View 1 (cartoon, rainbow, N blue to C red):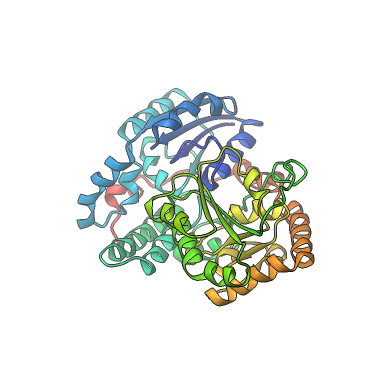
View 2: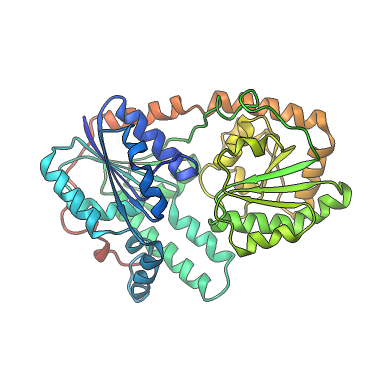
Length: 413
């Protein structure tokens, strides 16, 4: 088959959640089909990765966009019913490239990665079956953001949640199949779009790469690690809450404890945490495993979360015990969730972390059992097999051409 793959950010290098899933999908598709990738780059540095990604598929088209300018351009749409995420990821140049390629090649499938890419469907033949991977239900995430933001930003986030919910409903009921990363996300989307065909296809983890055998442990002081892109609001909120409310309680019992925050693009608020005793902010690192190797415990202290937290899978695969909020662990299978130590309040979270730092037998047992469970339940091979089955199955095409999917036509409910 010939597949046109549309995604909102270039999925290379596969070093963060959204890029990891997309990259593995492209690689798996390309082993059996011709895959043309069309994508955007909101960071100029990402343009240099086009050639590397091109080794894994038939062709790659990358269009640069200015993230800052796109946010400014979206402001006038506050007075409309349009989700602001849509203009942030719209490029006339990408639309022209997609339209031109679709005229030259007859595609058997169109694959959308992230719901915002549905706005490009008007450039493509209506008879071609479409599979959309929403990954997470983004409208739910924006609604969660609103609960932790101050007015008037909270009102903007709440509005975005409402508008995206309407967009997700319209898009998911028009395409052949919609994928999401967890059963919870599937239930959410079925509630939004009862007529849609929704399938849960989980993420995977490279358990050979994230293995203590690949990068051995480096003993040191009791160390808590958090990994993630620090430009992402839920990650920022998680580490600041942990540093403000949890870490002092841990340090009161274990004075030598260190909190290691590993991830690119830490802003001023996150950088400021480094002024505190025992906190280290690394910024970008070429290999996160070297910092997992320093850790005693991994944490996922999220109050805003959706889908599967790759950071939990990677830490468990590496054999680290994990402490998390129930919301952070909610996307895991029951078997994996049972091996994550969960706590909600700062007091309980601190007690959980202290227990893991002090009880080496408990920590070692959870780490070993967690790795075994992740290897069994979160292989990329199993996840991608299911994705390919859905993509290659006979699918209906014939999307409605009444502009029901165009961004301009969507109005908030």
